[in-house]
Length: 412
Image (cartoon, rainbow, N blue to C red; front, side, top):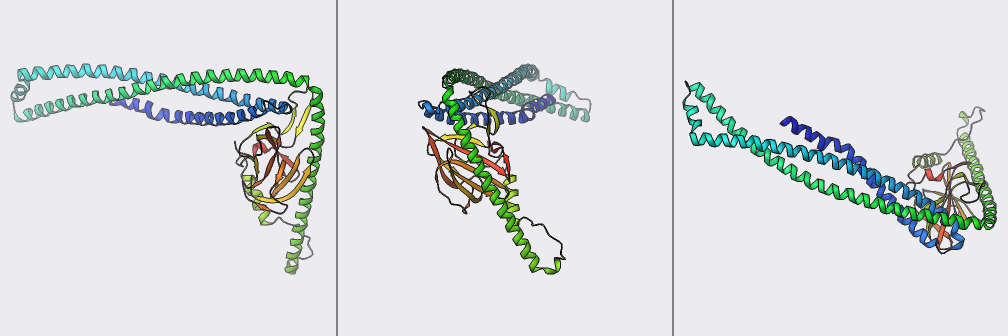
């Protein structure tokens, strides 16, 4: 019996330990997705009546659909866990009921035997019929162990009943949980169907307005080229200035130590501050805060097909985040403002240096900082430009002259 209970404890304790960890991860993911979907839904509501924002609404809706599909997959995984948990608990309940029946049957036989002994006084006869003292002691110990065994059986029955009651209650809760997941999955599927229909309607409307979209795209590409040129010039200028400062520092060090010169040219080395800043920024990959407190990425990094114009490829050196109107824009990492410029199509643009790395923020209608300012992480640097009822922020990450995918640097 003790071996059987040990097996139960292994099933109930050790096996679900790793299993529940996966469930916790799924629950955390579900809550995060629901939060993101709610945020995107608010942005979609604000763009629903703005004709000029139709393309942005289409992009936002695409992200919403992806998140919704991911949420449905998460709910289905949680439902599978709930079903597995229900089956596991049902099996345990069945085993406990079998054990309880057997224990009660065994205990009933013991009780009837004890009753007969009391009526016939067979215990005393058994004890006094011993042939010698040692045999009488052995019979007394046997009767004592027999009584202990009866009490242990009674306690085990009570313990099994208690476990069975707990498992029955857990079973009922798991049935309710399973039903909740089924209903929530069905509700999300219905919402997904509505969003897919909305996407089809938007696509049809955009295709009818293709001429305007092509004109808008041409303007955007011109503005993008101007922005890229401005960023490259500022970063190149900063790199040249940094090298000059390093050479100047190296020359001063050689002048202060002429004996170490020996007419051998020395390459300038980076300052400790620059190295520390670069290392710190690099180690924060995937953990940087977003440049806005809430938003959704509607244009991703790199070369990609235009969402509605066939055979058109667009290139994005950063990411475009749609956020609420007049949202505050913030610095994602401590650094120094090395560039500030107005770029037609992108409004105000700021470049912040973090050692060898640079973060770029554009589409700012207001700017709170100046070139040369030292900034803290999450410090407000300006206000996002408003496009209709929402705002957009263009965000880039560079390492020297190399463009990096900002989505892999920010958290979430």
